[in-house]
Image (cartoon, rainbow, N blue to C red; front, side):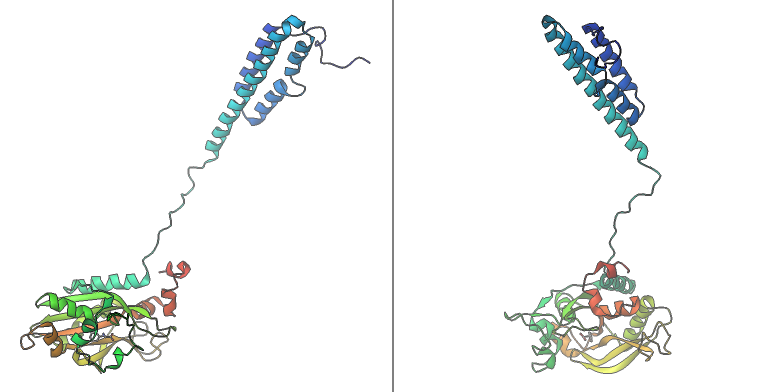
Length: 348
Ligand code: PHE
């Protein structure tokens, strides 16, 4: 049987001029292919197993010995240049396709924006509100001396708050401050009245952690020293703060208490901003929310810092930041503020 070849092959071997013409035509056709499937069809037509390249290889096989070298070179050049044209066209078509697939009208990806920690939010807001009353921010170290944390604050040597059960001692005579009140001492040591400062910061106590206790927590301390400062000033300023922070109708009440560094001393409560004082879940049915302690600066504190207590009086207060954050933001467990779970924190 006669082998089957495409028409014209046997009798009509290609010469070198025809090979070059075919190459030119192939490259033109490839360059003109409009999409990837047209390109593939052109590739198969020229380079495939039944493609035109076979005519060239046949001509090469049949060529007289003295022409084989020249035809072999042309055959290689055909394959290489046609393949190069295919590759180039494919790349062009693909990048055009990906430009077309990029929908510029789609909304962008929002960069993730963090939020301020709830504790930071409350501190920033307190700084802002007391700033409106003329208070500036003061700062002190977390690692304190017993002098600043206790002695200068008129706290006797046998006071229970000094017990290692209630204070972290660092073993070198220093301690982790148990409240922000030592900042009062540092400020008064460094300047003369009038003084109007708040001191937000971290405090430490060896409390067992539970839903309302954390071994580290934050307070905002306040100190106002001038001539004739009274409990009325304290009540007025705290009321302003409470209304700015919690809501416009909040009232304040003082309950008698004791602190070594104030006399008289009070604990103060805000009326519940949720129920208005009638009693609800937030205020545990009492109508009031305990905030912290305050009072008129004890003359012994002035003595410790060299202020003249016949000329000056002052008030001081402290407030628990976590407590305000939890009440205002509806956070049921103080540990949520310290677990650093962003699923919790980013809600605020
Ligand atoms: N330092 C007190 C506490 O930690 C609060 C306080 C501050 C009381 C200032 C009176 C004056 O409980």
